[in-house]
Image (cartoon, rainbow, N blue to C red; front, side):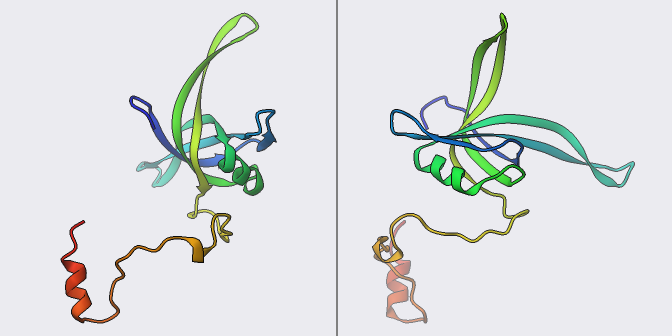
Amino acid sequence: MGWNETAITVTGTVVSEVTHKRLASGFSRAAFRVLSVERRYNSDLGEYVDGDKLFLNVTCWRQLADGVGRALVKGDPVVVTGKLRNRDYDLDGERRNISEIEATAVGPNLRWAKVEIEHVGPAAAEVPVPGIVAPRKEDERAREVVDVPF
């Protein structure tokens, strides 16, 4: 992210259909609407109640858009992180403003969902492994690892 950009992370629920398309430029774009509902403890009632509601449009690009288009449907619990944007537009002569997220990462909220991960990047054998590996038992290598400055 660049300077003075507003980073945001929202947990919520997908409340619209997920649209996914490939544009003339060749890039993929996915979009959906997310609802985040604050939960507050009401001591008078002795239970949690709904608080403020926040609706945001979410836009994803390229590989993230492809993954979102394959994986998410309306009703899914999600965690969305990205850049908060405000956009002005005109509707029937009336100027309006909308807040939206340009997502950099989207995933299922594992508090409310069970998932099986299917890696789409390089195979595990192709992923570089750090040069320092923690020893399995106390030996000479353990002292070498401790002396490495991080």
